[in-house]
Image (cartoon, rainbow, N blue to C red; front, side):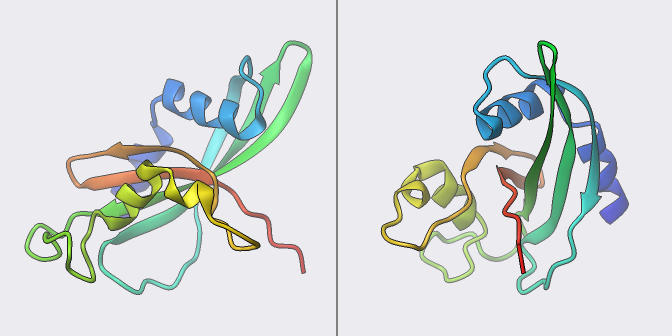
Length: 136
């Protein structure tokens, strides 16, 4: 299963990915040169998490080249549970939170990664978001 999703992500729609990169770099004319997809190690707490992946590559904007990184979270629809919106483990909760725009308006020092789009799939959904660098 993990290989299947990795194959699908490596063949991601370039227009979808380019739009996310343009938002992330705040450069509306950047074009993707190439990219790679690699899994991000994470602690799986609930079965609706289908994986975390880092997408990174090089973009070109005229004569300039710029590296970029994004995170894509896969959210799985378990089909047999977590279907009720009020349920603590409602499978679509995170997709809806990012789609709502509320996470972009958090007050104070707490903030969520910037969201560059939510894509619903037959299996659940994908959240494209900012890659947060951790500096020790």
